[in-house]
Image 1 (tube, rainbow, N blue to C red):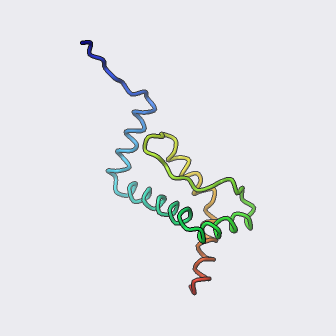
Image 2 (tube, one colour):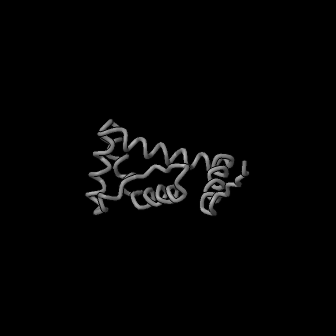
Image 3 (cartoon, helix red, strand yellow):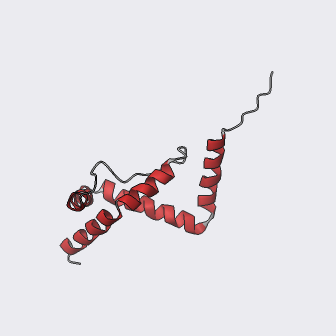
Length: 105
């Protein structure tokens, strides 16, 4: 029986290194945990999502730019997640402020 050697492509190996580093380095792990919580808050709650979309509209941001959650297997998804947070940061802050004001601050 032939012995095959499987080698990951460079992008896959780099992704494995990044994933492992992000899990081991506590501040990176915390950072991506916060990104995940922001994503969950605005996507799992219809009310929060409505505030977020309204803030995007008021700020003139592209509504097609949604918050993204990364997948460990997709090497570029971490960057897309970070980029979406940066692009939508002002809408996130405004939505949180509006939610806080409606809930009594």
